[in-house]
Image (tube, rainbow, N blue to C red; front, side, top):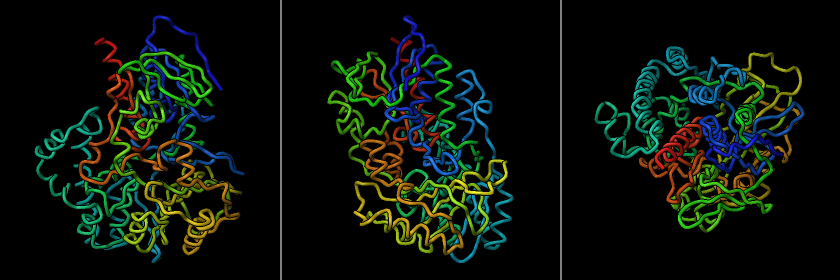
Length: 502
C-alpha cells in the first residue's frame, strides 16, 4: 500500500525507515517543516509495536495500551497544524490501575496523591501512608530534576545529571546511587506488597527491580501525571499520526521492507528496498532496533553505528495474549495488575532466562475506561507476562501450552475466568517479537536499563555516518510511546539545524 503526494523539487528530501512512533513523529515534523518525506514500513500497517490483532469483538491491542505524558503528543500535533484531541478521542482515567494480590488485598491508585494516601492507609496502615507520601514527594522531585537535563536534552551527560543533583542535595537520598530499586523500596515501605507494586514500574522500561537502579522509581511519575485511553486502541493513534503525515504531503509506503541503507564513503545516499527499488536522499532516519545496524543487517556501510547495541545486555521481552472473551470474576478497570506471591522468585526466574512459575500478570480490559458502557457480549483483552530476551532465554517445551496454563490458572485463582480462553494464535512470544522487529532478540525496550548510567549508554540521534539518524525506543531518551516521540523531536531538530548549518 502506498500513499503519494506531488513532489516539490525545491524541498530537502528525507527517507524514514520504520513507521513506529519515532519514525512517524520524525516524518511528521520534517514534513511540516517543508521537507519531502518518504516513510517506508515493512508491515501492512503503521505503528510498530503499537499494533492490533483481529478478534471476535474487533481489533485488540497487542502492544502499548494507554497514552501517558499527553503534552508530548499535543506538542507534536500542534507543530503539524492539528489538535491531538480532534484527531483521536481520549478518555482520562480517574483510576490509573487496579491491583490485586493473592491474599485478597486490592488497591486502586489514581493521579491524585491524596486519594492514594487514603487508599494505602485503608489497606496497609499509617506507616505505609507516610512511606507513600515520602515516596511521592521524592519521585516527583527526581522527575522534575531529571526531566530537563535528561529527557528534554538531545545529548545528556553525566555532568549534567550530577549538576541537577548538586543543585538539590536532598535528591541524593532519593537517588540512592548504590541501591537497586527493590532494595530502596524495601527500606521505604513496611508493607512488601507496596514495594512490589512500585517496583513493577521498572518493567515499563524492560528492567527488573532486583537489578535496576533506584532512580527508576521516577517512572511512577510518568503514569501519576495522567493516563488516557485512546478510543479504538493505541493503534488508532498510530493511524492518526500516519493520516496527518499524508495530509501534510508526506508519502507512506506500507509493505515495503528495506534491504539496506546505501552509503558512499562516510555518508548516506539513500536506501534500497527488498524488491530492488532504490530511493536516493542525503538524509535517512532509521526507526528500528539499533542492534540491526550494528549486526550489519542494513549493510556494511552502516555497521559501525551504535556498536553498544550489539554489546550491551538486552531488556526484557514479553508474552502477550490478545483476544476477545466474556469475563466472569472480580470487577476490572482498563489497567489491572495481578501480582504473584513471590516477586523475588519471579525475577530470579527471568534473570536465568526461565518462564516465571508464579508470574505477575497485567490485564488490559480494552473496552473499559472508555466512557462507554461495557459490552454485554465478548470484550477485548490484552494480557502481558514479562519474559527474558532471546539472548538469555531458555527453551520452553510446548511454550504456548505452558504459558496458557500459567496465565489462566493464575487468574482463575483470583476468580477471573474467560470464556472462551484463547488459543495459541492469540499469543505473541519473544521469538515472534524478534521476527516482527529484526535483530531485537525479542527485547521490547532495547538495551537493558540496569546500572546507574545505563540510560547514558543508549545511542543518540546523531551517528558517525553523515546523514544517518536514529529514532525510536532503542534510542535516547528510551523506551515507551512518549519517549519514542521525544526521540523524534530531538532528531528532527538536529536534522533541520544541520541543514541550515550546511
